[in-house]
Length: 112
Length: 112
Image (cartoon, rainbow over all chains, first blue to last red; front, side, top):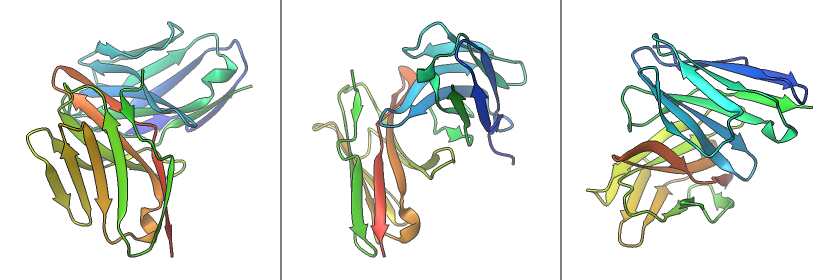
């Protein structure tokens, strides 16, 4: 069974631009969560989607948004990029809500 | 408001000895606890979990202990091996709040 796939793996963007990251969950998994990892901050929860609906949202500004499609694939969008948005963005999928999550390799976003 | 704390950012242990990683949480409503391991440039990998109805769960060299009264979680690795060198994150969740909240991580280095 294929794992969680995130694309692209690496991305360099300029301040002010917008970016879309993609996540394909493990087949059969319906819950997809997004996390931001920065040095010293651990994994900060962004949002969780289940059955195409956002079920939970972390403390991030409205520039961060996401969606989930009917095939459970999810996208995350960040608009008006800031230097502080440089981070590793991780997607995790679960078969149900509140079970152990399986992570993708992440997308390393660098804003210059 | 750091609900989950891993107070040791790093830990060095001799190969063959026991590694003990600690995690404290603040909300007694959390009732599902997990440990993840992360290598550089990879997503976190689920290691072991425990629910609040138990105080110990063992899987091979890994044992997780839960002290609910102290709101404290620990991971014991014995014997420690060089391949255990990684960053370890604890994560907590609750059946009323499905998102996982992660600690800031502890970098474990096993010295050969």
